[in-house]
Image (cartoon, rainbow, N blue to C red):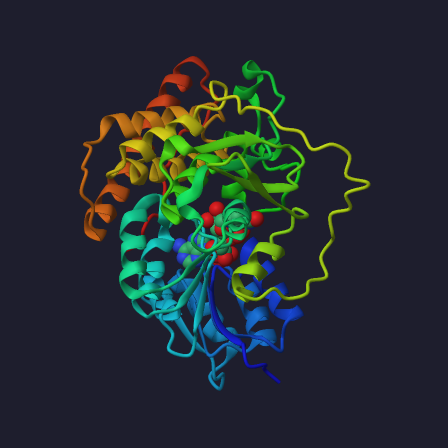
Length: 413
Ligand SMILES: NC(=O)c1ccc[n+]([C@@H]2O[C@H](COP(=O)([O-])OP(=O)(O)OC[C@H]3O[C@@H](n4cnc5c(N)ncnc54)[C@H](OP(=O)(O)O)[C@@H]3O)[C@@H](O)[C@H]2O)c1
C-alpha cells in the first residue's frame, strides 16, 4: 500500500549504474515509490528483467532494433507499451502517469528529455550532468518559468543542496567541491600517456558507468561538476573551488561569508543522494553502510594537479566564457572518451582532442536548442577528425596503431 507521500517515477537510464541504484531505492521503499516508466539505450535484456519486476506501463529504448527485440520478448499480449528512438525517450520523460523523472542517461543525449520533463512539469531528480553543462541556461530558465524543481543526485551537488538552508544562498562565499582524484592521483605525469582503459576504469572509491569513470580519471568529471554547480546554485566560477579528498567521505562543502564551513559526510554509495532527491523535503530511513567516525582514520585534502590533468582547466575556461563552448567541450569529451575506451586514443590525448575542438570551432554567445544540436554535431565531427589526424601522425611512426572510425551518439535526431 502506498503512503500519502508516494511518488510515481519515470527512470531514464534505468539499466545503468544510477538507474539500477534508483531501482534499489525503490525496492527499499515500495510503500512510497512506484515505477511507471523506464528508458535505456540498447540493453533490452536488462530492461526486460526490470519490466518483470517493476511493471511499468511504458518503456523506451533509444535503439529501434533493441526495442523490436524487447517487443518480441514480451510477446503480443504484454500490457507494456514499448517505444523507440528519441521520441520514445521524450514520451517516457513526459509520461502523464509520472510525477517524478529520474534523469540518469549518460551524455548530452539527456538534454531534450530533461527539457521535456520540465515542459510536462515533473519534479526532476538529476544525475545526468551533461544537459546542464551543454544547455544550463536553457534548462534553468525553463525550470524557473515552469516552477519545476531540479533536485541534484550527483553526490557533490546533493551535499551542497543538503548544506544550504532556504534563504542562505546569498551568504555563500564559495562552494568547495571534493574530488577523489581518481585512479591516477599519484601517478607520475610522464606515465599517463601509457595508461590503459582497464587501469582507468578501476576507480578507487565509486562504482560507476564507464564514461563517468574515465571522466573521473581525467578530472573532466570535476570540471563538468563545476559547471553543473554554477547552474544549480547560481555561484560564479571564481567562487567554486575543487579540493582533492581521496577518502570520498565529505561529498562537498559550503563556506559562508562568516568563515563557517558546512560539509555533508556519508559513505560513498549513490543510493544515499538518490534517495534524498526522491524523499526531499523528507528524510527516509536507509540501510546502507554508515560512516564510523572511530574507524575512519584521517580525512585529507590536497590541491588538484591542474597541469597534469588539464581537463579541469578546460572546463573552467568553457564555463567562464560560456556560450556554446561548454557544448563543444562536452561533445569533444564524449567522442574522445569513447575513442579511449575503444583503444583508439591515448589517455593524455583526451584533453588535446577537447582543446583542439574548442579552439577550432566558432564561438557563439547566444544559444537555442537548435543551435546546440548543430554545435554538438559539429563538435563531434571535428573531434573525430582531430582523433584521425593524431592517429595518422602516430601511425606514420608506429604502423601497428589502429585507425579511428568516428563516433555515434550526441543530442539525438
Ligand atoms: N554512476 C554514478 O555513480 C554517478 C554519480 C554521479 C553522477 N552520475 C551521472 O549520471 C549519469 C549516468 O551515469 P551512469 O554511471 O549511471 O552511466 P551508465 O552506467 O553508463 O548508464 C547510462 C544509462 O543511460 C542509458 N543510455 C545511454 N545512452 C543512451 C541513449 N542514447 N538513449 C537512451 N539511453 C541511453 C544506458 O542504457 P544502456 O544500458 O541500454 O546502454 C544506461 O541505462 C551520467 O551523466 C553521470 O555523469 C553518475
